Amino acid sequence: MDFRDSPEDAKFRQEVRAFLGKEYRGEYQGEGDARGAAQIAAREGPAAAERYKAWMRKLAAKRWIAPAWPKEYGGAGMTVMQQFVFNEELAKARAPRPGGIGVGFAGPTIIVYGTEEQKKEHLAGIVSGEAVWCQGFSEPGSGSDLASLQTSAMRDGDDYVINGQKIWTSGAQFSQRMILLARTDPSAPKHKGISYFLLDMKSPGVTVRPLVNMGGTPGFNEVFFDNVRVPRKDLLGEENRGWYVATTTLDFERSSIGTSIAQGNAVDDLITWVKKQRTEKPERGSGNGVAVGLKLELAERAVEAEAARLLSYRVITLQNRGMVPNHEASAVKLYAAELSQRVAETGMKAAGLFGQLDRSRSGDGNGAKDWPPNRGRFVRAYLNSVSSTIAGGTSEVNRNIVATRGLGLPRD
Ligand SMILES: Cc1cc2nc3c(=O)[nH]c(=O)nc-3n(C[C@H](O)[C@H](O)[C@H](O)COP(=O)(O)OP(=O)(O)OC[C@H]3O[C@@H](n4cnc5c(N)ncnc54)[C@H](O)[C@@H]3O)c2cc1C
Image 1 (cartoon, rainbow, N blue to C red):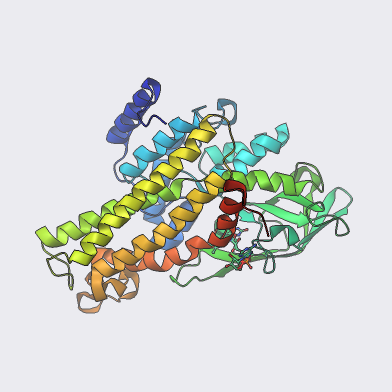
Image 2 (cartoon, rainbow, N blue to C red):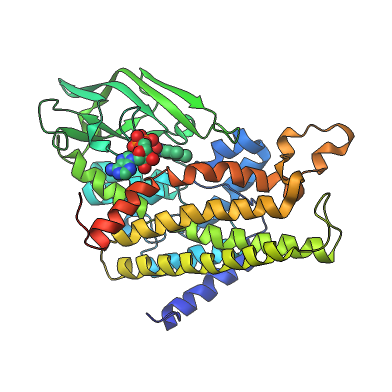
């Protein structure tokens, strides 16, 4: 593959850089993304949420919330490669990238399977950056073996009546809509009796109960359905054919290359922090030398981040040719998720014992809140990275896909 930008892509890269130089004032920096302003408000307060919204409005005005969507649906009609260039440039500037479940996989699935009414009803909210979606697929007994799900949807007149439970539903407490899988024919083989719904989260009978993860954040939820009525117009695709709609969603989900870009940034930031300890005033506990072991480890992380980037290029190249990446997307997901854990471990080593301190939990007496190195980011990244090899498909499942579909090894 030729790694240089085509003349059109190079021109577009310049356009994005000029836009960022002029328009991005660091309105909002950090882990804001996906679950929108409500999540940021809960985590960091209303002022941070307003700054995030201001940035999203600037992107929406350029049609850059979902840049590769067709223009008729509110996108900018960019190629997949241009969208990648766009994401790379935003990442380099540390500007929040639009994304999340709405842009990343609910919207694209609606574009493929939705009726004109469904597209009209849902896509505008996503490209404005306002509507937040969550994904109600996993259940307490169904994760990797998703087709075994038990939540039921029974026809009753013009509605379906939903009963059951979902779990690990990221951002459900901030979402207006859910892409929901439920069983409409319990007597059919497991893949054939499932339907796909676009659920209004305000429907009576929906209860969302946040779960606090080991990093102390309520990132995901249990969601309970007690006789929830969903109108027939909110069925996406055909009744009992929802599994095939869901595989399209999962293809979009696994193709996400955001983690590779994020890991490149995380390694760069870590190296910058380590150098700063050496040349400027070091933070408590870090000393001003760089141990040989740490230097070697940082070099290894830098090489791995580059490998993750190249694996992403492979996926983008396939998508740009109109192909659907399969085991190639699994390889990126697997490698980038495991890399995020190694980068977080290296960060903790670099920070030493003080790395365990988190700014938000260190109290404010005697200047204690200033003690966590790098404002507590090391420990947060370390705790949050643990789930990365489970979310969106576990490492074991992705290794199986690479082994069987990629390497042609037998299934059993
Ligand atoms: C942070 C986070 C966010 C999430 N967000 C969402 C969300 O928004 N929406 C949603 O629907 N779900 C979400 N999930 C759920 C996620 O998709 C599931 O956790 C994941 O698919 C694994 O399913 P499980 O937890 O049921 O584990 P299981 O499938 O029960 O797996 C248990 C263990 O067995 C292994 N295993 C299972 N099958 C095989 C096999 N065939 N071969 C080898 N090993 C196997 C797994 O790798 C794992 O180690 C999230 C999960 C996390 C951790």
